[in-house]
Amino acid sequence: MIREYRTTTEIAGPLMLVEGVSGVTYEELAEIELPGGERRHGRVLEIDGSRALVQIFEGSSGTDITNSTVRFLGRGVELGVSSSMLGRIFDGQGRPRAPFDTSPPIVPERMLNINGAPLNPYARDYPAEFIQTGFSSIDGINTLVRGQKLPVFSGSGLPHSAVAAQIARQARVLGEGGAFAVVFAALGITFEEADYFIRDFRRTGAMDRAVVFLNLANDPAIERIATPRMALTAAEYLAYEKDMHILVILTDMTNYCDALREISAARKEVPGRR
Image 1 (cartoon, one colour):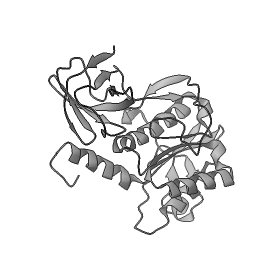
Image 2 (tube, helix red, strand yellow):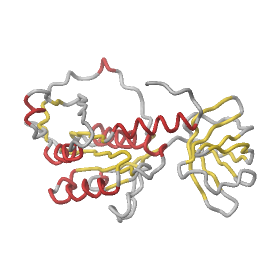
Image 3 (cartoon, helix red, strand yellow):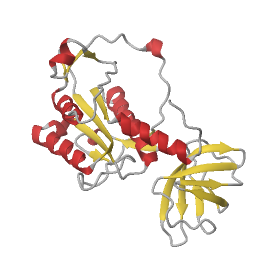
Image 4 (cartoon, one colour):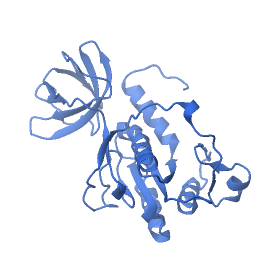
């Protein structure tokens, strides 16, 4: 159920405080209509009684507090999924990322909430199936297997982008039937880095079996936080419903952590080492 309010009392940076609300839930999507007809989007960060704190994706510059209409859409952030996602490039909100992808939006088979559902760790299969990355130091010393996470730590100036791109184009599951695909999510990278990844994937043919999510450095911080969940939602759909072998690559998690700190600072929370 869509609910409309014109009770915004405060705006601080990308945050908007709406009072007198009811039935609004955490992480619910909101639509802000400005007096000139422009529409912006946001997500509920916090609920305190009848007050809702909304993070605006596009920022709050030019927002007229008294005349803006806030609509709460009654649903969380969702991603439209389909097998036609393979070979496509999306932004952090699941839309085709121009200028890298100029094709029309996909026709989704389903709409999935990106928050997903918790997984019972006891129900997981024991990780035992080898994934070949093409890096001898990984394959021989710190072997990657299906169902496992493998962090790759890098210092400033080291070629972590080249490592991520090489894993994306070389990785494969040995001795297994079924299709294999890579879900690649880049967080807070520059346009130059994004262009490097896309050119490399297209040059080597890896793009045909990849789903790419690009969040650039000038995109909103709240979108950067949603991007990994977008990627994992796509990966779970392809793995569990399309019976594909999926490798998810997320780079750079440092930018993700910076986005968390930026939102925390905007909410005037006490800084912490975590």
